[in-house]
Every structure is written in structure tokens, then in C-alpha cells.
Length: 436
Ligand SMILES: [Zn+2]
Image 1 (cartoon, rainbow, N blue to C red):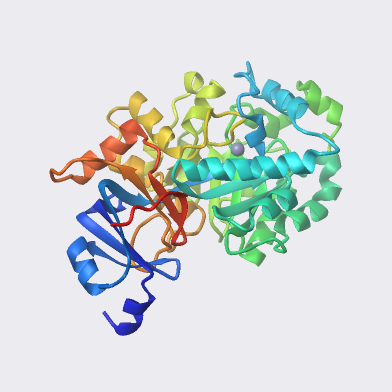
Image 2: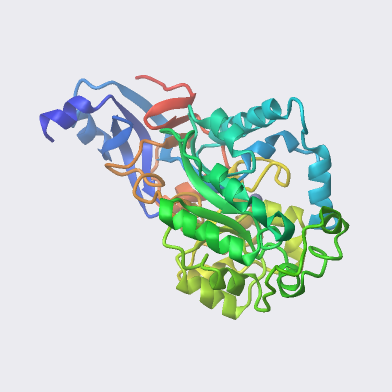
């Protein structure tokens, strides 16, 4: 340990156990923090002797673990919490959302407050980074840019049929880096196959690659996307009164017969050279899984939102087949318009209750290292290791006996306890640090 690292340590957090990631745990451990990063991690005694004189915050009855990463949410929809009962069909939900969403005067303030409230709720559940889809990116980025939540803000873009002439303007706004900050990074989100036509998707992917911006898209969320792409028909197309009223569909929209995954491949999304997150991917066949396995895309499984929309009863999610094929899968909440809260730990709890044989370490990776990779932040967050950002949480786990890693993970996923403290970039953002 050289003198400069010793001096740059601002404080040490010690705990009953420190979880490095889903595979490694240090009993009676401690983490030395400085400059917003983890400087050193190890047994408490060793860390304290290396950093003698540095202030220690001791969480003796707690587990210290990496901050959780919720790679797919829409914070600006937090004002919709509990307002829309589970719909008979997704299209009814869209109408209910539009009817309830703030319009015109005062809307900006409501949207900004919703984004901030969603950020607060995320932190209170131990989430330290989110992938946030925003239709009103200028408003939500302004609300979030001073932190404390770490955010990848994906500006949402729609461009279909008669609205295609607005693509350039929408792309410019979504990709605008004027509001990026230490907390907010910029990404692009082509919305969905029924709101972005193929050539527009291609242009968005090219823009993301040119500017090195991560991408996120809702894909294969609904079984009806296939019919829409093939003929512009079905419940998401001509049979949807709302779509008819919007009067967007025209003969220049290229039709595509192979389903949404092949469509996304055809227009360059699956081979994008930037991080790519695909939200939901509820409906896939073997050929789709092959396509995903050849791409570097991450699939975000949102279990309670799936349940809310009734996808569970229509098709089992293939997340375990995806992992078996080497596809990166993470757990995420989606928004408060379709989910009871933004606690991603409860998503793991929900999966574990339905699939008790799901591997507990794998589930935890789906809350940390896997979503970090989805956002292109795998070398900065999702683990507690030297050089990584000091994004972490402490949860109560009293006891003196040795704590095997699987039992620690079992306990926190079973109980999904609220954190006692949360740090982002080495700053306490929730709870009170307990000084010894
Ligand atoms: Zn979503």
C-alpha cells in the first residue's frame, strides 16, 4: 500500500460480511473508499491496519453488498403509481396511460417531480443505477442531472409512417448531451416495433454507433408484434382504433415477415457495436434464441410487469434457456404504471417464489453484474472491487455464525429487506452511517 492510496482513503465501511459479487463474500470484511471509488477490500483487521486513522463506519449486523442495478424503468411514469388496474390487453393500458398522463400546462413540473420521486424510491430500495427510458428527456434529465442516483437516460424515439419526417428532430433531442452530468449518461431508445419503422430503426442504430451511445428497445413484448410487422394488421395495427385515429400507417412502411427479433437483426439493431438492452422479449422461438445468442444484446426480464399484463399465462419466459445459451439476462422493474414498486430485489423474490429451483447466485447476478453489462458499465458498477465505483448498500443480517454466500443471498432475496444505508459514488445517499 503506497502512501498516496492510504491518504486518499476517506473512510472505511466494515460489516459482518462484504459481498464482492454473486460468487464471492468476505466474512468480517471492510471496504476502504476514496474519490468515489473502492480503493481496497478485505478482512476488517487487515483493512483497518492498512488505513489506520481513517474513519470507520461499522455495520456489524449487516451485509454490505454492491448497489443494485435496475436496467429498465421509466422514472417519469412514477406519477402513475397504482392508477391503472391490470388491463385486458396492452392496448387498453396505453389508452388509460394517455388519458391519465399530465397534459399541457403544469405537465413539465409533474414529469420532473415524477422522475425525482422514482429516483428517490429506487435509492430507498437499494438501487444505485437505473436505465431510464424517457419520452420527455429534456425534463427528466434536468431533474436527475444533479444526482444522487446514477442514471443512463435513454431518450425515447418513435418514428412510424406519416410521423417519419420527425425522426431527425426526435433523434437530435434524444441524443442531446447538453444535460449529461456525473450522474446522467445519455442513451437512445427506439420505442418498439409498432412505433418505429425499420428504416428509422436503422438510422437510430447508426446514430448511436457514431456517438457511442447505448441503446434500449422494447422488443417481442407482445405476441402481436409479428402480425403488425408482417401486415400492419392485428391488435397493435389496423384493428386498434387508437392507431387508426393517429393515422400514421401508410404504404411506405416496409413489411417484414420474420417476427420482431429477425426484424431487429435485419435493421442492424442486434449487431450494434454499442451496449444494447432489449426489454421483455416475452415471445421467442428457437430461431429467435439463436439470433440473440449471436448478438451481444441483454434481455431485461420484468417479472411483475409480465404478471400485470398477463403474459405469464400466455407463455413461459425463456430466460433460463437464454442464460444457458450465453445470452445476458437481467431483472428489471419497468415503470410504476405497471409495477407496484421500483424494488428490483422484489423481482428476484417474485421469480424465486415461482421457480424455487432458480439458482440464487444467478438471480443476484441478474440484479448487479448482468444489468451493469447491459448498460456498458461492467467495469464501473455491479461489483465491490478495487477501482469500481463505491455504489453499495448495507442490509441487516444479524448473527455471529459464519455466513456462506448462498445463505446470505437466500436471506436477502427471500426477505427483500430495505437497506439500512445506501452509498453512491462513496456518498451516503440514504440511511445514517453508524460510526464506531
Ligand atoms: Zn418499458
